[in-house]
Image (cartoon, rainbow, N blue to C red; front, top):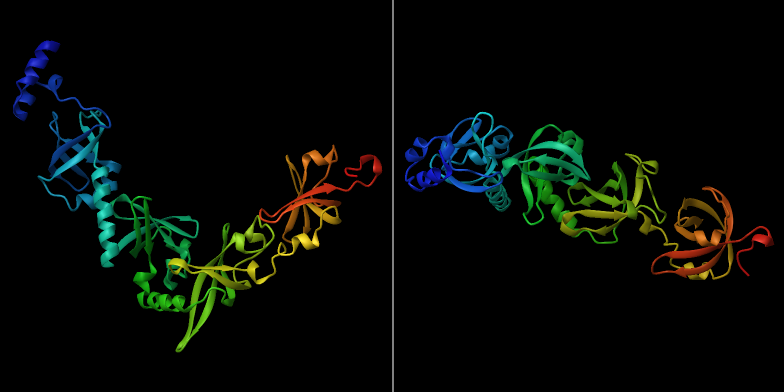
Length: 369
């Protein structure tokens, strides 16, 4: 059919029957990524067909269908829906489309309703992440269960949820941040969770505890403390962030602590019912009297802890390090672990920075005065 005749023929189309009579050459053309509205014509176990005005019905199948199968279960023939064109025509002549956009909006509404009603949902443990486990949820959504929201049924261990289907409740829904947080404990031990909330409310910042390390992570320690109640003892779990472990810099938490270690901690935060503890705040901050102890131009012994392209870091005492800038080394080669004599050039207490100079062992290489 010539191009001018094709345009005239298309202009005369009034029904789907008219369009089909024209053959494939006159079929409505769709572009990949295009959004089109249509009506559901057929729903099968692993596919859904939608009339979008093409030569054939568009189809959702394979991974696209698996992603939205929970949403499809609430659809019926004749429902109007918006689709996105994935492939205008595959090798079987089918128009492949996605309805993830429609499913997403429906899904957020679903989880918001579950959060308000306290209804249970089924999630699947997918992979470990910082402080908990990533799960897949209905409508192809991903969510997160923090370790503190995993009950004794799983020993509070995120790893024990991997590759398992578990019942959970929605703790938080934030569509703007694409954030879903679930709780397994609200299902497996709801009474205990309520009891813990009351106990946490009674805690005061600055309360000190003897704690057990229950899990070691790259970002810190999860510890368990005990709170005495009238009718027994309640165990509560919280986090000691790596920055709250020691006044010294810690590169690898596992080199310092292990599971079942006993530690003394102090409560520093309980916002949103999440307990955060500190180990280092039970000890004196070495920077509190830093200017009195380390006066300008005074000499001190230290140990090189790190060599970098900008200079050498020297430990003066646990929690106190200073920098010998590369420009002050004048060709001197230092190595990590080496004992050196240094002098104080300047101290910035607010930024916790000390500038050092290297005390030379012979006058020829003297770096000051």
